[in-house]
Image 1 (tube, helix red, strand yellow):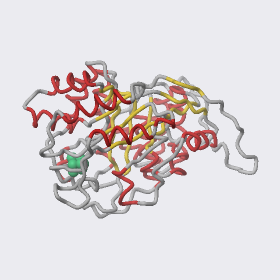
Image 2 (image 1 turned 90 degrees about the vertical axis):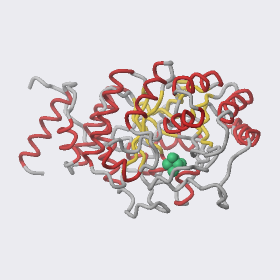
Image 3 (image 1 turned 135 degrees about the horizontal axis):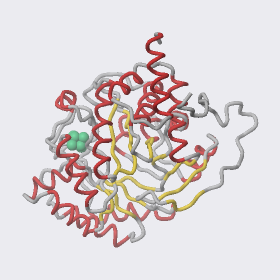
Amino acid sequence: MTTTATGQLRDIEGRVLAGERLTADDGNALYACDDLSWLGGLAREVQRTRTGDTVMFNVNRHLNLTNVCVASCEYCTFERKPGQPDAYTMRIPEAVRLAEQMQPEGLTELHIVNGLHPTLPYDYYPNAIRQLKQALPGVAIKAFTATEVDWFCELTGRDAETILDELIDAGLESLTGGGAEIFAEEVRSRIVDHDCHWERWSEIHELAHGKGLRTPATMLYGHIEEPRHRVDHVLRLRELQDRTGGFVTFIPLRFHPEGSRIPRPIATGAEAMKVFAVSRLLLDNFDRLKCFWVMHGLTLSQLLLEFGVDDLDGSVVEYKITHDPDGQTPDTMHRSDLLRLIREAGRIPVERDTRYRPLRVYPRHPAPDEDRHERPFRVRQLPVANPGA
Ligand code: SF4
């Protein structure tokens, strides 16, 4: 760091600790900073003032009803064209059977994301939700990206408000946060192959919030975007959150290049730490910052708890989108695994429902293993805020 840069960062630190909102320039300066310990300490301090030592998680299952998709996004390894040998579309009873298998785990949420199937009738989707809800009445249905809702509009000629009303009537309790990728058009036009861009994505989430749904928001990082695009992305979300207050969490998703058409190495752990910490510092109106452990691995996910993360997804998973090309990351983790991961970091696990209401607060102990010198680990502790000094 240069002296000037250090001065700028100290200024940012003072403003963060005084509760002031950061600017795009601040965000860019934070991405240019390589003092990860300082960055993590500041993000953790902000997170601590919002949610203390708690880390939320829920017991969910990811379901992908079909991988058939008309689009061919550059980063996607999930979509298949009709007729490809591994293209599939589940019959609704099969989806119900898969979901029912998870009930002994204490499932509270189904997370459903699909391709944009060209010929599957729209009625399939509300019918699927209705039947899943009938079979699992205590399980919340979090389903469809804004991109899928936009696709349903195209399939039916109905507007997004009507589609949302129909899906809510069938039992939908939340949209998923996907389809966001990177909002900046100069990046988006090179990696996204459908027409649901920022204006439409934000319109659909705003409509959903207006109807009482609470939704997550995502960002796909580590492909062709630059740090300034990430800053732009989260500031658009911050502005939308100012208007609606309907986002429950922000989820940076690490791009996995294996099998995609974007040839670049996977983002490093240091890059992930910056993305999470800077997002936490910029998003002053989001309560939670989620790490999706399937895309970050377990040890990095645990470390990211010191970089602003206080929300982990998920504990019971069959996740095809990222797992297939990778094969390295475990695709299933149970409640006990997640509890251990959170407790080892010295934090308090809180199981939540889809609307982020606490269902159960777990004790912090058992205490960390005395033989492990690093537990609970701490990135640099910041001095007590004294903005007047
Ligand atoms: S990201 Fe979604 S819309 Fe794009 S190709 Fe993959 S499944 Fe289709």
